[in-house]
Length: 240
Length: 240
Image (tube, rainbow over all chains, first blue to last red; front, side, top):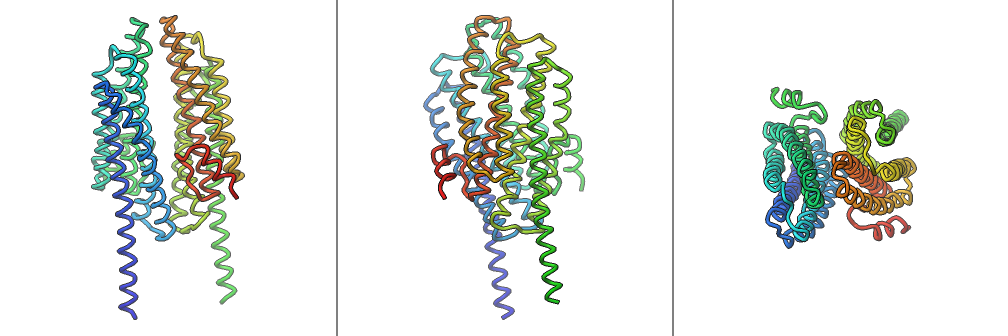
């Protein structure tokens, strides 16, 4: 009887672990898709490839569906398994991260929309180098925040948060240049505005990557590091 | 012994209800503060009141702290009480809604920043009527999404979601007018851009109010109505 009961407990626990692993894998799969969306959206803009832009917008439905699936999986685990401690934090973090990934997907779809508009209206006279550069940086932030999650690597998560601050500075400087350009060449306003919206979306994607990184730190360390500033975040991550 | 045990169970259950009530009240309190932030930020812009703008930016710290408190309360309830069914959905929804409220707070702080800039640079030549109008509409959306939550009123939540679509249209039309104005008067570009960013923030606030409304429907009906479109959302809400 004891043996049976042990076997039963073990079976439950294996199933539980399998479910946690599944939600973790779903989140990583969603992250991979979202990262590709960001990369494709920027490429659609740079290459004036409106077909690719349309594809990105179409794929957004799949991203949205992935968010719902992950949230369902999380709710099911909470209801049936009543996880505690680090298991609970994993579920909470996944549920929060799915929201950030979905929003990154939204921003990618917006970028794709501007890419399509610019293909139709003719290229903007300025801003492509900045878009390519900031685009590559935030795509890498998304990638690294997910790698940090996959490896429970808080130091990598910290680097993502630090990178966000530097991206914000580059974003602000690019925006100032574009405003100056607009004033000198008012005929370009509509097209330059498209690039400005794209940069704004990229900057938001960086914010969401930072959010994901903060959830990774919460999940591993048990400390909520949102809103505490980079200095204290670093102390939390590096303390033993 | 039985009586003691019953009393104990009842005590636990009362405590549990008190905790759920507490997180609900915390969320409503945060909602009230956020709503005031939106209203003050718009007023700072309209009245060119940079002191009020600075106050809004300062208050954002309190909003952020409220988010952390609510998420802590939710995590504690999940860990200790292992809620099921509608109690679980309430906790999940509160945790998601706290994120939306915090983002609304962020947008209000951004609006306040633009209000301060405009006070320093001199008024924009256009866009105040639109800002006042769209600002009042999204503030009402935030308010109604919270009332829908307080009363578990899915029909009111549905109206918020429907309103979001109409606000988006008004936003797009205001943006087009501002672009036209910029092209006619390039010297106004910097100031008009400030108004455009404000309108963009207001539009985002409307999106978040809609998210909150969708969480209310999930919490009451048990159905996740995100990404399904207004028509199917209406069917979900109105079906018995």
